[in-house]
Length: 460
Picture 1 (tube, rainbow, N blue to C red):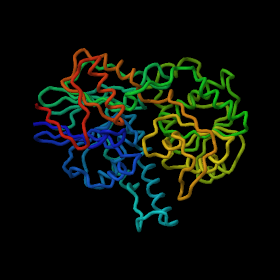
Picture 2 (picture 1 turned 90 degrees about the horizontal axis):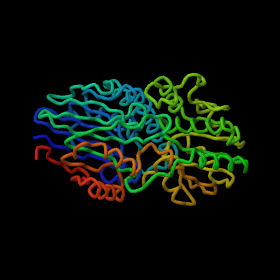
Picture 3 (picture 1 turned 135 degrees about the horizontal axis):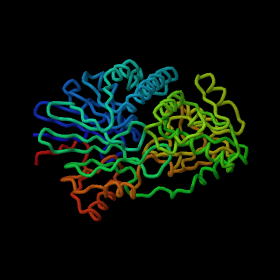
Picture 4 (picture 1 turned 90 degrees about the vertical axis):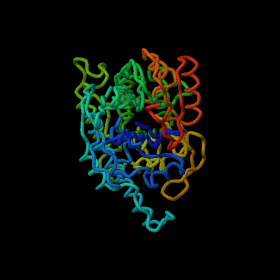
């Protein structure tokens, strides 16, 4: 009998992993890292609930670390099967997996050098060698092309509009029934990415709930961002934007360029201090045919993602020089939740100065440094020391790549028949519970919010 076990993204937005057991095979859909709260991050170090060598295949919805970042560790534990995903996801995985591993190894070396870890020695969660082994097992598949992934099981990728290459995974079981793994649901009418594809039916559905209890800021044609940039420039300060290196950077650059073109903001130097984000821009530009049609009309300038004074920062030495400068500028750097990477050095320098602004443009998971900053903490710890927070902290949720409650319900409204069971995943408890009630009230569907390591029988 087929079973579905929830190995992550239960009562949290991170660690997406769903295990399917069939009589002759075992599959994993998504293989993400837990992020945020320490008790969640510690799960990454736990022994995996099933032996990695017994998993035949992995299927990925997209290339964000909370959906793919555990792959190097799974490979290190003995997984040798193929990892099915779209071509765009495969390209981005070649960026994010080695980068995450390098950061883990660098953090471990720094902790050992400066002695700010209680572990002796501090070990990296991921290694770059394992990341490249995982990449060698990627199997790209085009959108809407059914692909067998195990005995009697096939999958089809449908565009989710959340990230380059992002997808819903429609899985057909040996008995002909279908499971739709929603991954992360994109938004409607946004620049850069297309709208999520409508799906008319599925027997079982997993739907995310990151913003299941709230609505995003209404579309203001970029005015909130323009106001933040103008005010920071008037103070002579710097605007530092911790950003997810792929997906969010593209929309940020799009909006800054548009605001410049419309003369609604001063033309400032825009520094992109993230080698991975720079490569991500290249992939987006190469796959512009998969993006929103508005990005590719006739006569558009050659660079789809550039501003008037756009600069890329590649080397650590260039980054250090940029960090030391104080002239007005916009600095975009990763990571998006300020959990690691080059952005921490920019934050160390800019947070103590009230002329500066820190702008968060994406979801901030509980327990992350970004969440603590947007929640108003006046000191944060970075690289083993406390840093005073005097800079202005701003948040712009209208750029989120996740559908809000209204957009989730809009997408669900496209189903022509209700799924047998709908599982609400990938959300904090309040968001999950609110969305469950709303789906039951408005659609009358059977909805369940699974717990960590819960297993359900799909033959029942």
